[in-house]
Amino acid sequence: MDILVAPLIVGLISAVLSALIVVVDSIVNNYGEVEIDINSGKKKLKVQGGRPLLFTLASENIFIPSACGGRGSCGACKVKVLSDVGEYLPTELPYMSKEEIAQNIRLSCQIKVKKNLKIELPEELFNVKKFKGTVISLENVTHDIKEVKLKLSEEINFKAGQYVQLVIPPYDKIKQPTQRAYSIASTPSKKDEIELLIRLVPGGIATTYVHNYLKEGDVLEVIGPFGEFYMRDTKKDMICVAGGSGMAPIKSIIFDMYERNILDRNVWYFFGARTEKDLFYVELFRKLEKVWDKFHFIPALSEPQKDWDGEVGLITDVMVKYLETMVGKETEKEGYLCGSPGMINACETLLKKHGINEVYYDKFA
Amino acid sequence: MPDINPLVLFFASIFTSNILLSNFLGMCSFISISKSLKSSNGLGMAVTMVMTVTTVLNWGVEKYIIVPFQLEYLRYIIYIIVIAAVVQILEMVIDRVSPNLYISLGIFLPLITVNCAILGVALFMQLRNYSLIQSVFFGFGSGIGWWLAIVLLAAIRAKVDKSPVPAPLKGVGITLITIGIMAMAFIGFAGMINVQ
Image (cartoon, rainbow over all chains, first blue to last red; front, side, top):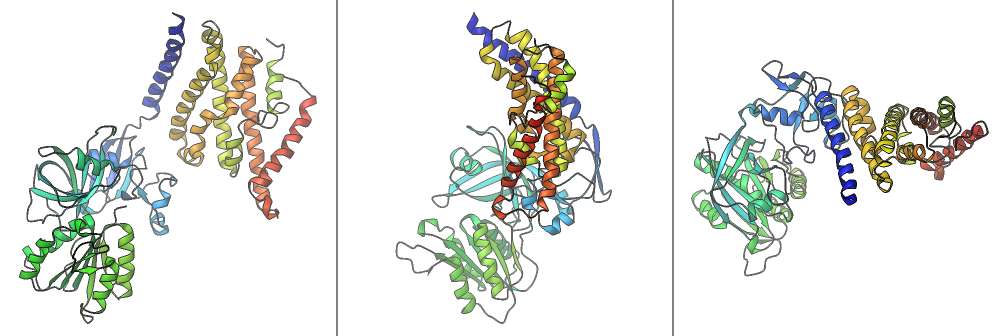
């Protein structure tokens, strides 16, 4: 009997204190109904206060891009807040530049909606929707990249190059839904279906789920489209650079151009990989080269193993070699980059060195 | 129960037996937060509140639960559970009432849970067998004492920051020396009243 007394008493004390916390929480954290005014009265939302702005807006079907799903670790969910919501939190400051602080741009996942708020959002975010995506095909395109095709519950309107956020449900030891951003690899002409390329990141919550748990017929939530990475409507030559699963948005852009018959621009597509087994879609782009004379596909391997007769070296070195020899110097150019932040930084610096100042990318950290 | 007037206990715990400067409990947040006078004031207030409330609650828990059920061996755990719950509630209240103070206290607010000064006061209260009213004055007084010490140190540090301090002593070095001198000054009061 004595052995039961101690746990019972400690349990009882904990229960009473927990109940007290719940009661105080329901009183103190009850901010009642508050109004969020978006873009000077263009949209007014009546919401329940107390939750972070990101989630409050999502519950009203306004989806702010957030690659980390609201954990304050990607710095993507920036929103201009016109009302006073208090000082910057230490969790926000690492993602803010001086200019952003001067404009009172905040991380929407870190600030709570406690009183009436005025915010500014880009109009295109109002078109972002939540879809149900049924997995219709799962295919390994390399040893660590999977091509995932999803049939959407309704039509999606996006620009080639944009991305969606995939909501990964709880699984195994992961107890909460997780959101991750993936670029769309298919073209906008297919409105009820999207294709994603997902590389397995060791220990990654979302990529482990996609590679080890996801199967055909499963339904995932998809939010989108987002992003500022898309083809600019100019006549300039395009220098596209991708590595690994960075293939996705570039493939979408190039095939969209082909489909829409925009064949008068020179497109140079540099695709970097380590070895032969990291290469994919090579045949697809080789075929495109045959029917589109201004399109040039340059795959390069940094560590070729078999009989590889293509380019060898880091993609940045190969790109420089072409910029200095093959690619015409007299024409104006734009850069389109997709890959790791390191690769993007290196390529951007090189492109700028070669006088190419218009460089576009979405950097997913 | 010692025969000490609660008011005497109150002043003694502020000056002659200051929990920080005579027992050196709660040093971590004392050194870290005392860089800013505003945050020191806020944390001092929070510590005072938690100390007073938890000392009283733990007095009740000691008298009506721990002693009757012979759970003396679980005293530390039970005291800490009570302190943790009070800190949680205080966190919510500060976030609501003064969001800017909440931000400036940052990690140190939840860390009050493991502030040894808070647990120390509760344990002294039990060890010295104080009555309820004595515990109230002792807890409140110790909180005020902690608050006074951190505000004094913050004020001194604000002055020291503008003074020519030898390079190797800058920062924590000169702060520790300052704390030592402050402690000596406070111990100077010790002859007046003895509450041990």
